Length: 448
Image 1: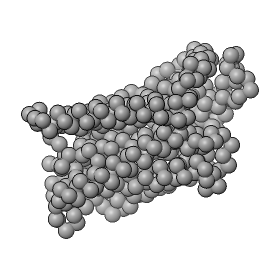
Image 2: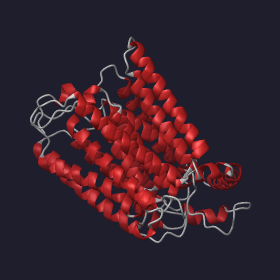
Image 3: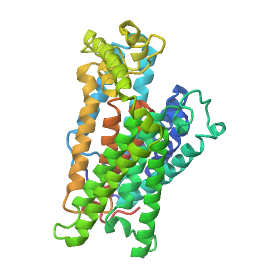
């Protein structure tokens, strides 16, 4: 990671811009998951404004823009290559059905890049990363409660609920997208609750260290938030959402257990046993008492046959244009030409229900694979931080970010959760929180 410029602390303009981007991450789910064009265009405008302010502050103060060069030298160049490829793809090819949709899709992708870059410029202190994580956890608590309450109180939703009755959809309309969102929130809260003493014993503004009792109380509160988020995932009745949550929780618990001293004796063994029992209990409760989830598990074979038939149609679509695809955000209209039975003709398939196939069908095999490689590189960099011998106050944020990537990667196999802007915003924010904080030796002497 680039060293922090020797010009004191982070300028106020950059901190305000970072706070504005964090506000977008927090508010975006309420706008129907940020999926409606008018909403994500508004969010994109806010993010671009914040990025412009940040760029101006970097230029006028003589600071060096921060990248992830030391964490992984390939992430920034590959991301720039992907953005440049997208621009060329949209300008030269457009869309098979709509050039305007391709342009809108490009703006959305540019907003993701601007969000990540702006937040990265803000992450010069470990304490700031912890504060941002706390804000996100509070937001997750609010969305979990909101999702549970609105199962029956649909009048509190900001849209007319015409599907998924008696299950939680929160502000997302689609239960699977809400499940992904809550799963990432659950893992962030769980990782924070299980953080090492370096993470729990935060220092107050006046310099007084937080005592062990305060640390334990904070951990209990965070565990409660994690449980509420998991309850919201249960309430969605999303089968893949629950599986993704379980996978993410296993990542968080496994990484935390690895930090226990090898000679930790009986205490470490008891902790490992409790963690394994907790994961087993979570799986058992899902199967035995999952309510709608258990009922839907019985129909998994039928759902799988429908999805496999859909994916066969999409693969035919990819084979027709493997190099260039049909254009960004042009899947819905282009799919009509490849729609074959037994995929129901009574339904309109606007999305591929598989983000990997959606990328390849819209952008071609080469360009569509770059985002997958980017997330893989980010996962490797996060794993290195999480597995490092030196434990820092933000090690648990690397655990949470890695778990979020696992959740998104798993659920994207069978749905389009990551194609919801609110989920993409949250995933990028968590990755920056996991990779962004400057190394301790680099931040010495910097002020907030």
